[in-house]
Length: 479
Image 1 (cartoon, rainbow, N blue to C red):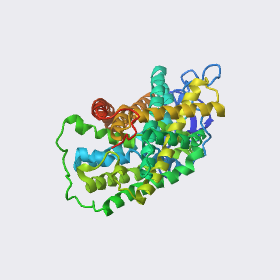
Image 2: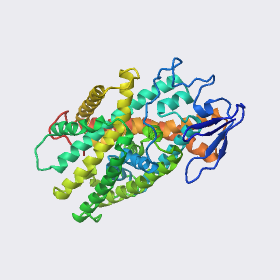
Image 3: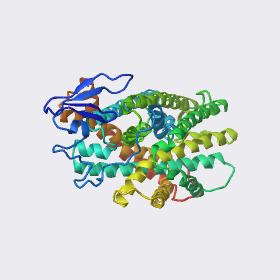
Image 4: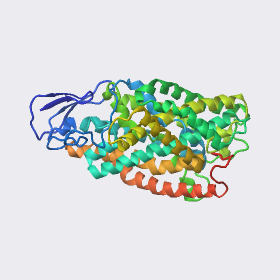
């Protein structure tokens, strides 16, 4: 029998009696249950493969590909919860009023609430899967290797790298637009502002742990909430606080299926952030409090998204731009709001940049810890690539649609159900009817539909935008 507190990974080994299912005791204060594991094999506690070998360690003791080097757990659960908000909320919420305009009030608000609650539940079972079955896993790639196999783990590892990288151009694009709007009286070109944003990011990208930026994340979260509130107040005070003169729709407005559906991907992008949850959990002081951290973040995001989407559409109707700050008039409030937004986006860039740099350094330097100079070279290379893509696809709504369909759909709707189902089956733990229903609907209905239709709709919209623009134009815009 292996009695274990899997949350802090302290294991007391009394004796081994194979073949019994896990016994679970109720957790306290919203945390996961404390587990008493009577395991079929030692991997129920330590993540070992049958035969006593962990899949993230080579036989000779060298660090294997999927293992992340993470800082010791030092972060309080509240900071982790705020960090999820800092990572997820910001650019996504700014596209939601336009998404509601494209879907109508009823469907738009329903999807905002539905995907928020679904993302919270899937994030919770993701954490439960890690802590119950593979407590030392710190990435999607590690969990994929342990639950399905090495090839799937390799595929997942590279997909996560592409995902973390792909969102950086969007943060670069948003920062460029924020600074350009803040200093609206200047004649600095879009690509020149991009170089300024790169210079601002050089120093902070040298931070090499989430703990190093955990406290500034709280300020970033406050900044984006102030941004959203100020935008709505300014638009209202400008006389655009009634629906007269604008068109509103309860049901989806007229248009082709693809033109309407492209707005759904905005909600997927707005709530997608599960790809770095496991590493965030690994740096928590008490990982059993992951549900508290997760739902703290969701309790901030869901109301903020719903209110912003509703009021933004009410104030501007079908004229609402894809990038909400673009509707602000030129004045001091516009400068203040966009500087706050730029600060938030820079922090969001750092949160996503961290696991990407770790992964690249592990590949390039064969698992060895990168020196400061090597880390500088990697971070600058990533910055340069984000700058290039931000100039090639400088359209906010279209880029959000591509990212939501290509990465938000599988990361949020495919991976957590797969990990949970495989974990429960591997330990012969029965799933509740509710879990079966949600996991099955996410995996077999929502995921294929949102992935295929979302990509087709997003690239169709992008092609239409490029008919009137070319890369590195001085006045490229995001609306």
